Image (cartoon, rainbow, N blue to C red):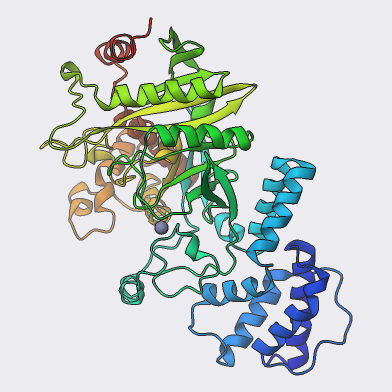
Length: 507
Ligand SMILES: [Zn+2]
């Protein structure tokens, strides 16, 4: 049983932690301590000296357990309650914004964003403890390094949780990206956001905000979101914003998902972009060929990557925007029936995933050519992973993956361990048994068969695991190749060249 004195001590340590890590001003210390004492119904504050080091997670866990045992939490959702407590000690959005602005002026924009990143981790908005559970490895592929992540940080919901989530939905906030999320208490259908502090920023004379992604799929993964809830649109304004952003934040990249289903991201209803540290695999790819651009002061190249990437570069900001918009508009209406590219049928199919960077005085815009057409043979999409790859990835391939960073579902962790037991001979593999629809590994039957054909079953568990990873690595390369509108064949390469020369008028 935790005593009142122990809780008062935890409260004092939490306040101290907030002073040290969350920019809580000592001017606000008494105010915040009293708020916490009131919440936990403690009448006498702590009087003993604080220990040297503060084990923040253990302190928070003690407070959560105490609050729940005494009926102070609204629900039994630990994360909702933890977010509420951390939210109480995180300074208000205006305070955080003022510190950010001062740092940007006095120490530079990179120092300011680094500080904001540390703050986002320190109040558990970015839950590093969960993110570190992810299984991650690198694969040195034929066109560069790929990063494969099995996502264990976001537990998949069970049916009861999904039903509760649907029931709890009120339509407010309108979506996960709306600025109205700041301070929101959360419910079964929408995460708590009391620890969210967004940084207002002006992009191309419009009000936008940045925040770090709670999922951190790559280093310093951030989201830029429009302050207005309006649909995604990839047009000239989008090109201007991406370039304007990297002008203001030259240490980050910023890119947009294509604005069409299948080839776009999961949220098309709120205008937003993904950005962050410039370590994504595609950025390391070489240039295959550079052409003479019809727009003076710009270069247009083909990038040597798995899918179809046109790179626009310029030292001049306005020219970079002009050339990127030019490629966007030309691709929107470009068809080449000889390689089955139809820009539109009953609806628009051609789209672009644009990604901007600023390097050594040069604006770089990588334009990944996409198409979301489906046909009878490819109901999921012609440029979507084929069905034999769906056991690894079935969902749309958005901006993060198209650049070579794969986020695979958490269920794979358990499944792959079970598959390894067939490869190391622990369990005998019978194709028909596993192929039965009720078998838990039925989706993986062909994968298991193929790995056994290659390496047999007399393997150590370690060798089995490694053979499985090899299979996944090859699959990820194949998935990227599926998204290529111009295939890496003689026909595909000359069709790509034709788009650049005839479609774009380059020489
Ligand atoms: Zn929204």
